[in-house]
Amino acid sequence: MTLEQDALTLNGTVHWTSESLIARDREVVSPAIYRYTDVAFARGEGVFLYDFEGKRYYDMAAGIATMNVGHSHPRVVRAIAEQAQTLIHAAAHVGYMAPYVEMAETLLSLMPEPLDKGKVLLVNSGSEAVETALKLARVATGRSMVLAFMDGFHGRPMGALAATGSSSAYRRHLAGLLTGVEHVPYPHCSRCPFGHGSRTPQTCCGQWKAFIQLTLEKLVHPDDLAAILVEPIAGEGGYIVPPDDFLPTLRAICDRTGALLIVDEVQTGLGRTGRWFAFEHSGIVPDIVALGKAIGGGLPLGGVVARAEIMNRWWPGAHGSTFGGNPIACRAGLETIAIMREENLLENAVRVGRRLMQGFEAARAEVPMIGEVRGKGLMVAVDLVDEHNQPISTERVKQVIKSLAKHGVVMTKCGPSALRFAPALILTEQQADEVVGLVTEALKAV
Image (cartoon, rainbow, N blue to C red; front, side):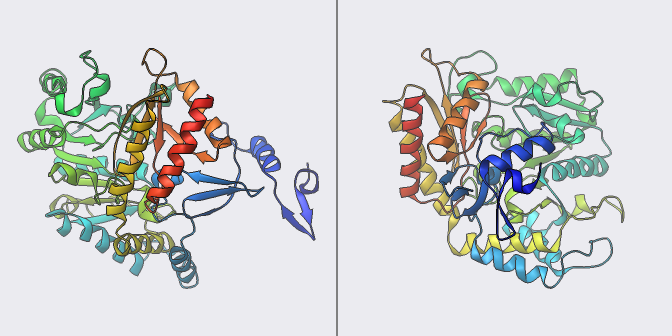
């Protein structure tokens, strides 16, 4: 098949069509890459994506919680172009680069004490950051065991996957994952894993505490516990908001046992929940923070921030990355953070997120398929339920998401049965209302 046969060719230039791109993709791209929509994206601008025929879509995925200041922000584009004209890549192992240092300094400036005096290591993704954090915790403590959570998602590589507990599908046909990881239930109050019915974080049964204690008594000796790894809000697992005492309880366990608290802020970090980091809502400070997604401004970048005395346990060459801290990715991330500060996007995330949630809660009266609406800031989940108020199947959720694209809204799911809203933090209240209207009409049709 030639370009002339499957795409429009005008004046020697290929002009893709959505149909031709999708057809060629299916010929050469691994089927492991699942697509939530049948849309081919030609360009993005702000909170919108456009296909090759010019149709506009509200982007409620934002590159999966990544494009915090929207698509193709002029300042980010300019920062990328200027850096590309100066230095594209040299590798941090070979010498020193200003964007790497500036990104480390900026990330520390966003952290509370004592992490603001900590140290940073930059990598390429959130999954890599999680694996780096686990490796660091084991080295720093000299211990081997890690406590992680069901419903938690930390990535798909073999190390991060060992800690991921959101779906058995990710582990299907796999063995030999990183050893020394034990899972306990995440406190999902609306679907209590201990069979106590539907509750709220404020009326949580608290059985998760007893389960952790039992695990430390029966399976993981406290002297062997290197770290507890946790998402402050379970992301891919369902945008589950835990009880207020969840992170403080984990902090207390770590303090008592000498383990380190690793908070995975890959999805929740950089303003998504209305704070720079979601752990700030609980008033605790972790020992290690894993970062990714939005910190690269749309380019591949991840990072680990840790207390200085922990990071200093590593020796030169103990860890590294060829592309980690790439100058262009750092510049894009630095400009993104600057824009977020200047345009008060954390406050906007709180205000518009509240508007989005209120809209779907109000729509529940006319759309019985809408179940629980939950989240913080612009991290919002809308559960879909059947006529018996039970979660609809995962396959049906995927069908709903494909139908939403036909109504001009693209997104992904989270958990087994929820629509995931993680738009750019520049979304306005008026745009949020329009999204609620489009999704509501699509759900009525479904």
